[in-house]
Image 1 (cartoon, one colour):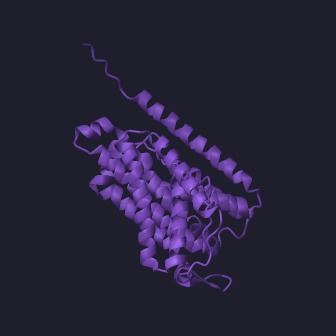
Image 2 (tube, rainbow, N blue to C red):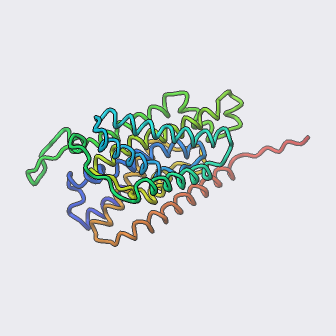
Image 3 (cartoon, one colour):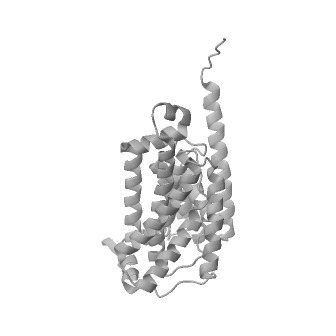
Length: 318
């Protein structure tokens, strides 16, 4: 589907396959990709996190105020963002795992509280005067190469960070005990508990990791925009969930992969970029994303029912 969509857009626009456009496409969707990686773990466990947009938004406000007020440096900025994200993630995970409150309820509450606090603190005003050293960081490009126009382009630092986070998440799921526990908890929590997996600790870790990635995403977003808009992430959670679901993760838990999520992110990025290049009104983007979510979830449910229907059944009489 991704290849077909790309070819269709390429036939409508001669700009789409230019290296600079493709790099801009990846750069502008790096934040979505980073957040979708965290959401992948959450959905694999059978949970959901609708607070991700609010969390990233408040973390951008925090680091924006931090840099404007104290100056700081890049390492401190990352530490402030990541620490704030992990704290919020642990709070979410603790309420879900130990208080046994449904994830949708906890994260809806978190989203509402954060949005209220952010509106009270910022009054909706933007944060400008970001330090020059941080703006210079956001402009870093590596592995520069010439293109047909004669200009030199390189890989933006935001794409590099996104790929590093993708590799980290892939290794976490594939090679660590906690990664296997994530799949086990989402697949069958009763069986997971019987084999000795600590479900509560796993869930807290997953939401803390979601917060960690939200901190990284906040720094990446601010480095791209070079200012902070408290309202920039309204409705962002819809896109994050859509990318993961389109990438093949089962909304009921138990399955999902980093590769699938990356393909889901690319699909949505190409779709949105194609709509812009072909001059289709932007409101269609939200409509199409909503339709894609419904289609992907419906397809997954139908597929799962077919598999369950074909499974051999054994009746046991007492």
